[in-house]
Every structure is written in structure tokens, then in C-alpha cells.
Amino acid sequence: MPAREARAHVFSKGVQNAGVFLIEQARLGFVAAKAVEAWGVAHPNNFLSYDWEEREWEVPVWFWERFARASGKDTSWEIGQFRGEGLSPMGSRLIEASGVHFLRESVEACFQTNLDHIAGVEEKRKGRKPKYDWPAAIVATYGKIERGDLKPSQQSDVEDALVAYFMDADGGPGESTVRPYAKLIWEESQKP
Image (cartoon, rainbow, N blue to C red; front, side, top):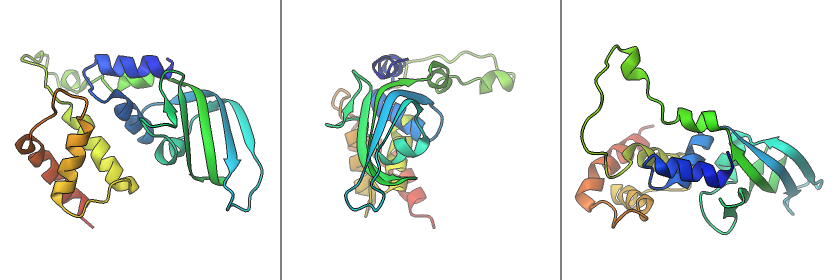
């Protein structure tokens, strides 16, 4: 499905920051994608000076890890374009992937939880749908720490990152709501 459609689909599942969620799932290798066209230009400081272009490029995990962002001037979900500078297996590069499509089955798999059926539990979940998608927020925030995009020096830095994740939500969660999740992320990130 085109990037625009994939993001809308994830949003329809109740994920507030659908773009962030998709990029994180791709970085983890759970969501597969293909670009109609991709090209790369060697970074001026790189001794490799050749350029490359490829059609029907199966977008590798390293591209999502080092080059793609969920938003910003180098990202367009409408046309499926992601561009960034970073270190690729071919050296330092500026790489752009355009006409990106996500494999529908891999996107759907992110929302399939058959564990209850495997365990023999047939009980349907009842109650109100959660207001915030905490699993996605935790994965996104911890992923930023692991990649070095976020370098917290104290727990409040993690709290700020979680609040920023929910920025599009109606006012976002309060400080007391964010704190227990931030504490878990902070403690885990401090382990050797």
C-alpha cells in the first residue's frame, strides 16, 4: 500500500503518531517496504565518489535506521518520499527513496495479536479503548535512545520525549501519567 494509505490505515487503528509508528516498525524489521525509485549521492567527504540509482528497491532496515524520519522537510507521506544523510554500507551518502509502498501484510501483522487464541483464551476484550498508545510511544522513545537520537541525562528528558510523542493528541497526557512510563524507559536505558 502507498505510504499515505499505510499511515492512514495505522491511524485508523488508533495510533496517534502513525508515521512514527510505521518508521519504528520498519527500523525493527517488522514492516517491509519497496521504493519505486531510490538514488544515492556520495557525501563530499567520502572517498567513494560514484552515484547509484535503483528501481523497485527493497528498502533495507539500515535505511529506516539511519536515513528516514517520520516528519520534516525531507519526508512526504503523500508521495512516499524519504530522504536523509547517513552512513550506508557503501559509505556516507545522501539517499532518497521515492514512491515508497509498505507491504500490507506486514503492516497488518503489527496489529494481529493471536496470543490469546493460542493460549486458549476466547474472552473478548471489553471496555473503553485506551486514549494513548503507550506501547508505540515506549518503542519509539526507547528506539531514539538506542539510535542516539535522544541522549537523556535524567528521567525528565525521557518524560519530555514521551510528551512530545503525543503532541498531536488532545493536549497529551499529564506529567503524572507520563512519569511511570518514563521511569521504566529511563531505568532500562541506564543498564550496562
